[in-house]
Image 1 (tube, one colour):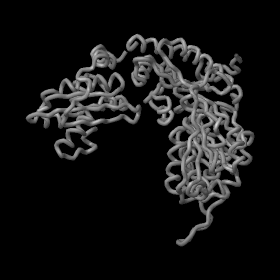
Image 2: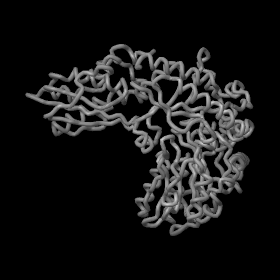
Image 3: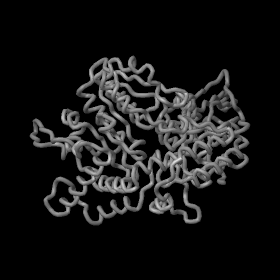
Image 4: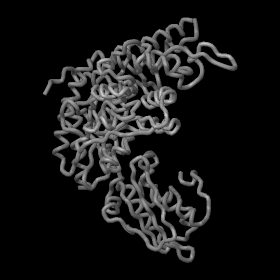
Length: 134
Length: 409
């Protein structure tokens, strides 16, 4: 079996961290994967230029859920500019999955990151280019 | 249960891709998406590019004559395969999608008026929904859909009411998710009774069963080469000659004209009128080779083989704990495919684990979001069979599903 279903991924899938919604929030963004119809909503609360709280909700495959769970752990306390620049390679390193030859599964892993970036760029009043998500 | 009238091991041996890797060849259960190709089809494509390559209907030199002859012979083979009354009723397109768009734009653009109804069904592939939405937006026509019941069959109790104001019925012959084989002859009869035309999406039926467009008494049928052992890039629109004759062009360009001045053009006769530009010559010739291959197997035999597999597939899937499959039970209206879901496991994860076990299936909405909305599921896993599959492939699938249960159950 590939690394894709190693214990850490399955653990985050079964018991996701930071699952739920935030009210009030400064950022709330939902993204969906048109390939499978999965949706992830990511909420952020921002205080003093840092991410003070984060939550995600929605349903998806183990890869998208575990990636969201690990990403939200990573985001707590992060500077918003650092979070804005957090990229695909950072996330893949974080979750430890070699998805460079799996373009379809890559989209699953990146769904929560996309929600975070789309939401943060809007919060910061900045323009997100499609290339920034690749 | 009927016996398998051809030797599956021999058939499988004729598909190069299914021989690799040698230590554990892939179990390919995604033919509803695109089939594998036998050596005879690959050889036809190779032979064309090595020995016959030239543009068609243009040169007087020998190569072009040979290419034209082979291209037109392929058209005749396709015509015979679906029992068209003439090869002139066969239009080569890129795929099923383009064939349906052709009818929607050319026939629909000329014939649909504001308030006219196009009747589709809840189980259609997006390729038999979106083209009608596009022409409806342009003409003011509206779409209506035949609902489905809990077993994934069309609900026809209310068909008379649904047919009010309908100018064209466009329904799939065989669902690419539920495996339902729809009563298209009956639908055609009812459509004609109210003066409507009948288009059939044959993408999933033509590769798997004998199809006779005249016996079905339909008006248009669209299907793809790549799902019936042929290369990608070639599909077919069949239409009744009188209807095609009366239709304006779909796209403009070379080949589809008689005379062109700067001001105006007179259009070629059918089928050339609908084949603008240099066509997919090698692919069409290879489609002819695929038709030869299927004809040699015999489509009755193919259908019997798949019926046997349908029975085995649903029986084995029914024994997997936590698994739900969709569509009608085994019977004359059930194809050898199954979309399913499993408690606690997402379709992508199921497909990924099966892949690691060497079993190729598809996960997703299979281009049928309205159907999945009716099933109240975002996505499903689909296993689909063809001529090269046997019961051992389904056994390997079930072994893979046990791993899914172990990880996620």
